[in-house]
Amino acid sequence: MPEVILPGASGRIEGRYSPGKRANAPIALILHPHPKAGGHMNNPVAVTLHQLFLQRGFATLRYNSRGVGKSQGEFDSGIGELADAATALDWLQANNPAASQTWVAGYQFGAYIGMQLLMRRPETDGFISVSPPSNMYDFSFLAPCPASGLFLHGTADTIVPPVEVERVVNKLRTQKGIVIDYELEEGASHFWQDHMGAVERRVGAYLDKRLEENPA
Image (cartoon, rainbow, N blue to C red):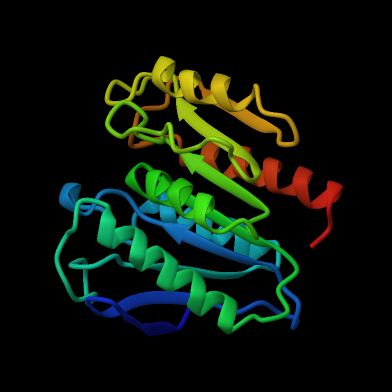
């Protein structure tokens, strides 16, 4: 999985890129957890998401946001991180101009940034949000949500209680034209220790369902 360096607003952005096997391969951008809580692109959930898309033929990019690893700059409370995400998606699209679909997937803080990116990029076809921190950040910007997607959460998440995510899901489900899947994994915590297989199984099954409905 080759290392790539992208030019960002705060300097270089370090990433890992896996190209697709055909010119019109769909693309997926993976976003990692909170930098101030040790989040980085090699987080197990982020790597699992990367592999799930790669296995299904996607050209896939995950990267370190500003101030993480070899990426330059400093944490910017979400504002600069959203700019980094947009830069990364621009790069991914520029390297895959014939991409048949565009997906965004994020875990924890990465899910929050990913959903904001989704609102600014109406060409996005789908999203995956794992353990979105809907009690820490205001998700009311998702009105309307431009794409169907999956929210995946753990019943044993004490950092973001499931009821907080359900509020967002229930609001989005009143919107016509999109379908929001919400799955709860019994016993899984915010960090998915001992439940990585559930992430792989549930996200993989969701992607397979969507790709069967609308082949990429």
